[in-house]
Image 1 (spheres, helix red, strand yellow):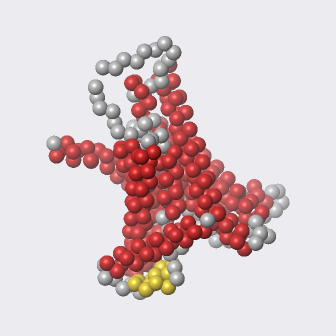
Image 2 (cartoon, rainbow over the protein chains, first blue to last red):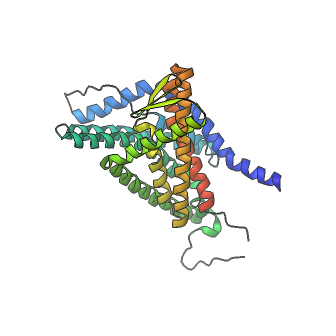
Image 3 (cartoon, each protein chain N blue to C red):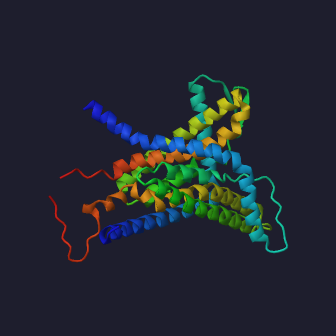
Length: 179
Length: 173
């Protein structure tokens, strides 16, 4: 009985340990490219906000990008219920979506900052808190959402339960039997 | 994929989409609250400072507080907005609230999550203080690693544990 319990606990911890290991590996890779990645994302967002013929000068960037992509990559690679090709496909689609969210986040943040340039100090502080929170939340939320939509829904109960025959939706006239 | 499997998959995806839209609504509410009410951030910072002081006092490590800064082991640490667990908690809380579960289970998930995330945040800052004291050049790497990857792993683990309680596996007939 104790051995069974230990085996069940190990089975619960294994996916998490796999995710943590992938997340660490992907974080190290993201750390190496973080500087150029952030400058590239900022350049694209700046070009969108400034419009043609104008230029936005960025100061110090503290964006926490592309660590959201590294979290998403770790989630995909540790989703062992999907085949390797499904995981790689999800990785490609989701990464493109997260990069889109990163650019959109910066565009929104810059627009908010520009619109608040003449606001009173207390309003400026409020906007500053909003901007920091948006930057902290958007990448991680996008990573989690993209994973749920591509692979996670098959691994997370009760969404996964819907895949089991007894929990599937019934067609009109279809009878469900219980044993 | 046969017709029935395709129908089940489509229904599951729809449920996920509804769940994600509810998450987004809760996250938007959290953003509005955090920006409108500076007390949330201030309370998070104060709680972090008090807990760190308490833990260091229990461990008999001398610590001096000056405003939002702590002086410990010949290093000073400013406890700022990012050091507070409130954003990580709001991310987690939105997911728990958006998930289809009983309100009692949600309430328990929110309480347990608050405790786990606060505990992790305290350990994270203590680890960063130790790194500052021993290997200052590793600080930036450790800071972002523990904030991003560490927080996500803890939030996922807490959510996964809560799921096992909130959505028990049906017994085989």
